[in-house]
Image (cartoon, rainbow, N blue to C red; front, side, top):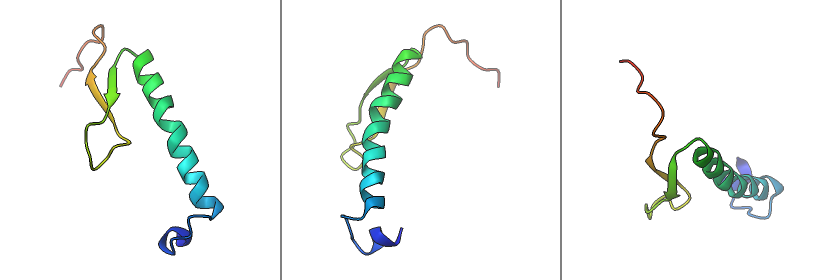
Length: 65
């Protein structure tokens, strides 16, 4: 995005990107939690917006290799 390279943070495209990012994190966390995953906030200082999945659903059989 040209506006990001030019550091135009007031550009609507930059604002929309931030709004989408803010909405997606809780949505993904809710979807994963509903599917039986244990999800926690990331402890990664370099990616604080990431989600940390600590456990998968107990009732899912492993896929064959």
